[in-house]
Image (tube, rainbow, N blue to C red; front, side, top):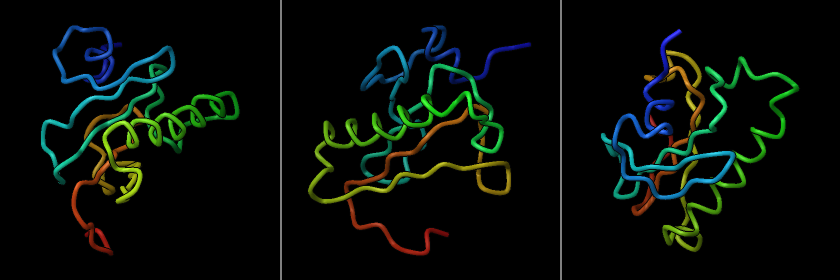
Length: 114
């Protein structure tokens, strides 16, 4: 089975603007930003999407959200605010079948998003 784009980025097979990484997640700038700050945070464990996560992934899912908050703070978004987005499936805008969370900020974001 071939690696996803995100697995290749984590393995340093494809270059990316890494912002943060540890043993659980990697965070890097989105190549098609939808806000002044648009970062993806990706678990190292390849879970295709949140709907395919199981009870054994509870710790990974928790790390994803906790680290997303830490990365947002590192990016200076703690006080102004930011949006976390997890797409699930093609109709939701999922382009890479590897669970990831978008961190969006740096401007006032509208609701509904689209």
